[in-house]
Amino acid sequence: MFAEVKTRATDAFGDPSSAVGHTKQARLRRLAVAWLSESGVHGVDLRFDVVSVLGVRVRVIEAAF
Image (cartoon, rainbow, N blue to C red; front, side, top):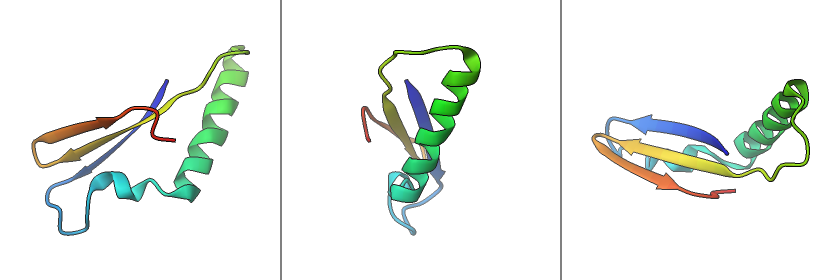
């Protein structure tokens, strides 16, 4: 499992999870594959979670993409 954590002090710019768009998702996928390859890990299922921290509220979106 890989997790991307996004934080915001307020919701003035929307929910923090909205900052994980298609471009960011593609970059995270590439980085995960590279890390697994360099670590010698093969044949595992990948899951990408997004953790949204807004003020003191924490929300975990499992299998976000």
